[in-house]
Image 1 (spheres, protein in one colour):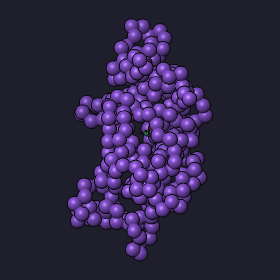
Image 2 (image 1 turned 90 degrees about the vertical axis):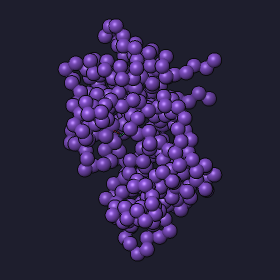
Image 3 (image 1 turned 120 degrees about the horizontal axis):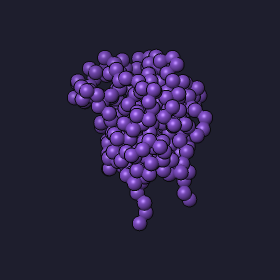
Image 4 (image 1 turned 120 degrees about the vertical axis):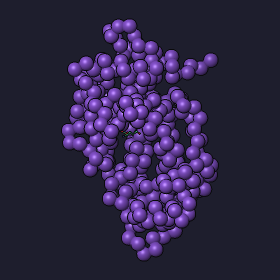
Length: 296
Ligand code: GLU
């Protein structure tokens, strides 16, 4: 049975859209339209201290000005706490999630002793808190893989970048599901919400490529379907770094949204139509030629 294509754009309202985030927005929209599918919007406002008041509404206005309008109701992660709590409980019941009492400092010193790379959690609390109060909740990656017969190395295919792989247990470790400050972690929220919105295809920026294997493991753990993935090229600033709100990327200039869209299309390597008339429809045809393989 052919699945109903559902794509999404999932901005964090930590600032306005900039030239880099518009690339992911446009690509996810073009992919959905090219598949005759729907395109949904999710406001990822779980990390409340980083959210900027009014930014979500402003992002929606920016998208609308560019002609990118969602096909269904907008999902707000700040209203999804019950769903995340239920997912965590499912994992706890399976024995696949455990509380962690480590402070950042303790993790760092354990990493030095165990010669783990600086980003890998060394598994200190996997078998008990040793009297420490619980701070965060983590996924026991190897327990999930063992119980479900999943390989240690997660292989997946990116529609632009080709075959990808990651040994999550070794390269990341047992990652956080609920943070020490009580906020829900991005990995859990994104997996629960992609499933709740019926997402079939994820199109997002290449800066998130490293999260995908973790999300696939979590999808398996929660008995949720895995998606098709495409990670879009990043826009680099003058300093050669990824354009981001953190390094002061300028918000899109809404006095000329089509110019912004044209620029984003160029980043995606789409042949830019000679006229602005019906630009999005032409970009869509160009996207389909580049990224949608036809059978036979
Ligand atoms: N909220 C994330 C961001 O703005 C995107 C998450 C995703 O697309 O999976 O970077």
